Length: 393
View 1 (spheres, rainbow, N blue to C red):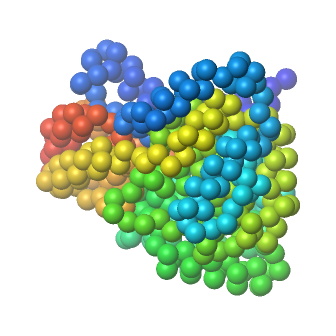
View 2: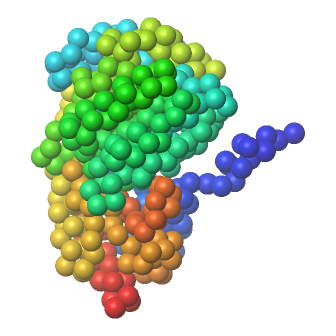
């Protein structure tokens, strides 16, 4: 017997991954320099030297210390290193008891959604456009994913629309800042307004609504500040991954933070631990837990992405495209030159241009262009972008 729901998820693959697989085939056939793959958020900046040095030091440890099981919640010293870093950066007072280490942001979110919901009884609101896997993880928890479109001009959170979508079943709101796919950093004023809306809804429905802040791009910004949301709204849980900041997407290391200011701290933390247990997401990679101890404050290489961002926005502006100016992350949200983003993508695909159409992210008429690619890819792609624009003239 095969689970029909799981078969469906496995058969209907991620559009992002499908495009990346297509790109790999085209590169093999034509040569990598002839294909302009903007699909994956795979960091092109190398991992910092400090990561390599930490790994080399760890390799001198006894085998059991290096490769053995750690506590399911993570090494105490690794969790304390993360807590100390958050304390230094945001003026908070966290401890190891507030951190649960995970194999990246995916299990962090999957466990958090499972911890906060009851199957068949709960809803989680996401702000569209949003990372497509949110919906799968929400539905896998037995909850309903409710999409609320962001402001279509600024792509800031439309707080009134969120408030209107809240029901007695709403268990959580997910925010992602800097946002994937738009690069938008939500300003403090918006987040405070959102917090007030959640407080009012809790009073109205006599419920508890958690703000889940997914922050894998926190360190990749261009001259703006990303507010620390738990200092704005108490009932917040933060999920994080080092995939982007330390260029470690294949190593799968991240965390869930349940701040001590959360009114149900102990219950939520225990529920996250329980959800991780039943999902089989226990014991994050022990080597990279040790890397965190050494590298938790190592800065991200933002400059490489800033140069790519400048080249891409300048080139597309000159070719007549419009886009959302990204505050952070390494994606450009570009308006398609026709209402049907899929049709626009197919025309781009014929020119070996491979962005991701916006239907994957819960809205219409845009494409996501990932600029975490070699600088030469952006420069060399510009004739194709111009030819694409000219085909609509």
